[in-house]
Length: 232
Figure 1 (cartoon, rainbow, N blue to C red):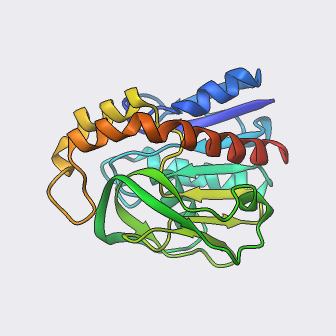
Figure 2: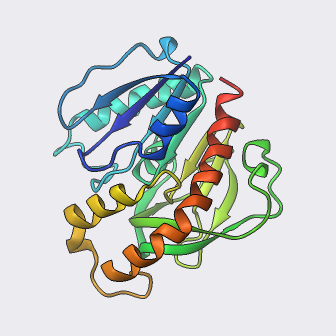
């Protein structure tokens, strides 16, 4: 089995997803859009993951490879591949499916509660149960729900936190894959985003509370990835 992922900047790697894949003996390949554009045929992969990044889905003028990436995502979805999008990745999926991506009312940076929707019928998300949980966030944009998608989670700052499409495509605005080192790299490279706001924690707050929350988010990430991989 083969997992392929898109990475948009050097400091936002797959994090815990890579650890999960190694434990499962799953072959991993990657496209680093900021460095090169080498992709396998979508038919040759079993599972596609799209990581986050500080750019926006409409920034194709500055990052021309975003256009090619969107076409690849669209092709993978049409082929029925399981697809996971994280943060920018979720926005890319939403855009490919025809939904609007735009600036959220609030920036959301730090650890904030996510509320699963209790009325969702998606088997892909029901494995998470109905309990609220804290997840790591780092975003200023949001998306409308794509037509035909199931809305599965929200937060106080951002109503559209997660959606499922065709019960094999999952968009997560928040990060379950983050590691402590990955969070430190985000802070180091995107510190200018951390301007005071209603839903922006300080560097000290984030680094203090991250170790306590990460084990739970990795357990959730396990469940999400196992659910997606089971349909690959």
